Length: 507
Image (cartoon, rainbow, N blue to C red; front, side, top):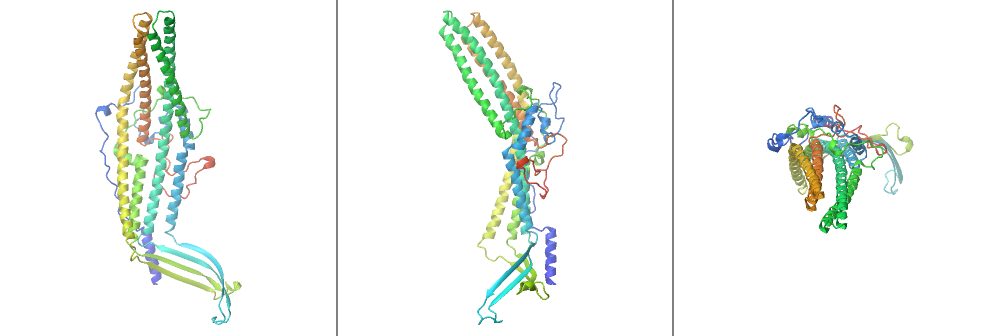
């Protein structure tokens, strides 16, 4: 009767999910209630009628990456990268490993049942044998059962810890996928910018070569100075060197894109758009900093790690209390194989056990201290993740509020430098001015053109990064139901393990 009462109490404790973990309370966000306003933040772009697309007030998490990027070539590259990128594959496989670890820990909550069959033969000296038979045989067939009754929630806490770590790993995968979408886009735009720089450098080289030919002709006929000739030659040589630099940077940019995509760039990629025609969404609302707690997978990952550390405290506390386990077996025993299942051959054993820690050399106390320290570390990591996210979004908003005006000014400056060069060249050819004015104007024009391309690239990559910082890039098209963070990915021959038995997780 006492045995049945003990089991009933154990089942009641297990059903209640009793643990000794502290009650979890989410730490307060260590950032302001709103993003900075005024100054550079007050000129955020909005929807206009000049062909700019609008987000229509949708949050970044609700905007699919195919809706954010309009370049069909870039869309295809992102699609390939999501299938091939090795870092992303590792993230998905880490989920599978974490899922298996969770299932191993959860299994400890349940009894184990094993079937066994054995035969033993023993020889005893005849003088010591009670039966007078020196050699005896014993055959047995039966079931062995064991169960640790989790009265104080040690296993339950370890299971909660493993579950939180599994969910954190899933969020890490989600963050990796979002970052991959952003990285492919940034690298693709960088590749386009190197194409534009090459065109500018080639144009500068052609103009410089034409000027050099004229200057050399004048020098050869005695109407021009060697100083003008060498100045014209310096521009040509500098443009030649820059052309090699730009060609090298373009090749390296393509190599970086190939690494992200996970395979050589296919020959059948659709035509792309030039850098200046990338019509990205520019008016995605930032929302509130508190929204980032639910939209940023890296913040959710940090909180899951905090939950895991909190559960670990419960396991460390439970180690101070007794461990109760039940073991037993039931089967048949017989001195002969044929007598195993005859009447009277039944045999059973039941052995409850209680283990109470008395002296552990301070190990349990140290484990509890370590668990508390690890939780404090995770609190700091969680708060840092929030602060980092706040800073990234604030920086992105500051940049978004200034790039349009900067680019407009640089376009006007480039136009002015072009006119200055044209006029200086005309004055030189008419003998009104020296070649030095042409040289200076050409150098300044080349610098202005490069700076304009760089500003256009920075504006676009800022929009891409801000889309990522606000949590965008997880869904493919607007209106789709977001996948769970631990959703499996089909890699064809290298497919990830299925998640049929995975625990539920937040998207």
